[in-house]
Image 1: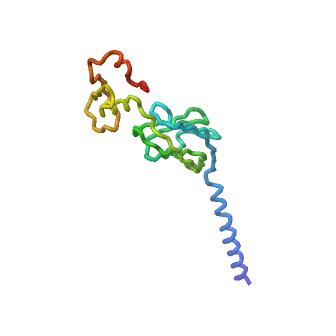
Image 2 (image 1 turned 120 degrees about the horizontal axis):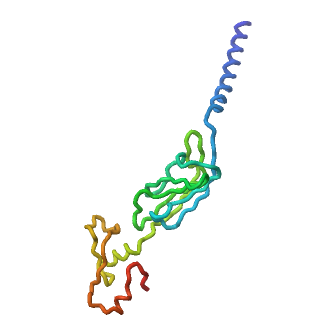
Image 3 (image 1 turned 180 degrees about the horizontal axis):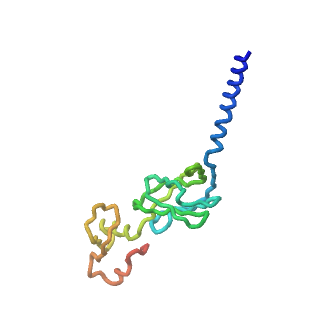
Length: 186
């Protein structure tokens, strides 16, 4: 009988340990915080403006935020605006005329680290530069001016600094006044 009693006590201890130990481990884990996020994303992108702004349901710090995911990849960094608001700014170069898919976070979960637990993909295009468009049109001989770059262009798909000059220097002033740099001519 003592052998049966010892086996029963051992079994009871094993069962109690199996149920108690996992619950002790769970209570010792880092607390989980969950945030709801609203966002503001412009439809056209520019390096002079924030890529997007996020508003969190509770105070958050930029150091806790995961990297923003974009396709194609775009180098960004977070900036704190207020306790509940952050913005992502572009630290790399935007590809001209590119369309980016940006995973806008709608929910974030934090334990020992934070991750965006829900995102919705949104499309945004790069705002084109009128001067760059005029540079391309001048180089293709579609304008009454030519374009001379300041330095040799290694990639003709990227804007370059330079000067515009009249192709026809004896053009009457009345015709010259019909074209001005960076104005829409209809």
